[in-house]
Length: 404
Image 1 (tube, rainbow, N blue to C red):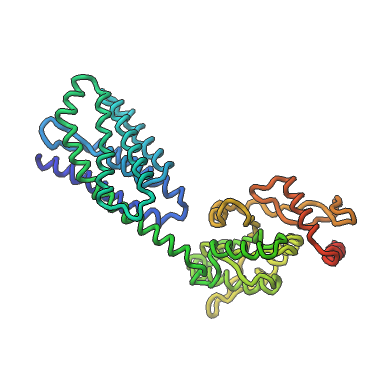
Image 2: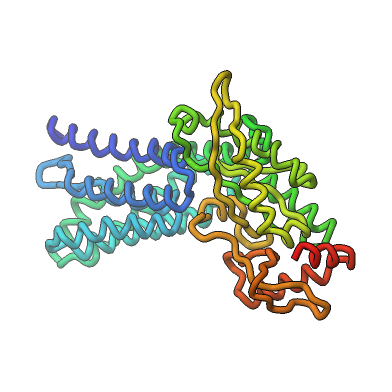
């Protein structure tokens, strides 16, 4: 092997090592799990493409590349969506390259990814995946060599006689080492997620994390059984003109905590609140809050924004907010809802009044009686409103009539 081939081999190995580093860093850098997996799938696919265009020649007349190693590692350590993206990128480029071995190459890519997925399925419940399991991954991934059976007779004989054994040796030498690196990053990331989930209060503002907030609401909802704590207000702190305040996460956390203290004057039952990403304040809603939701949002907006906040000595700052309602009784986690939450459309209120016979239409008045959640139809919303009203006492009904 000459110097140029050694350089090509070192470049190929270096690129694969970079995949291991990107695997851990992207997980920490991106807050969206599906997005980070998709980007990782794209990166692994591009790495396979680079390997196609950067082969090395260990001996005269034998030119091989490491394209199937990133594909197998993607199948072993990435999600199903990421594997599909990775394989799609590599297959698309292989189709463009063409040639006599095109279909054999595509079959090899597919087999390598499939073996990685199968390995991940059988080892996912193991407490630790160590070097013997990584050797097994290398052997399984090397079954992509069977794709050489698709080649024409002369090419097939030459491939299995000259190229198959060196490629197998490279796979067994490289894949376990890179897999150990990826497994270490995976376990480290899982441990970070576990520690993050175990924290119930944000250390910067003392408010609850979304997981702890949802759990506390679920406990209180089960205890009261009257519709309270099944929904929550999400108050978004709008980007402000002061670049220093908005770019400083500690300042935003202080604003959220200060705003919650002000809101406790008009929502006395809200003795706890949550926060998310230094910009969202989560406030639980009781049954009566749901019945006066429209008035409550106006009071919150007025109370939270009327006076400036002293975010620093001799520095006062006014804020602007947006308000949304989320349903806590859903199959989606609260954090997942907050990631996808849009503030473009506001609360849903229906014209109604509370008469002797229940709900009656009245076009000149609106009763803020709940909201239409992301998974709730219009009919379900009406039934939800009626159910809340039936749980009210006669005194509460009399007060609502007076307010109307």
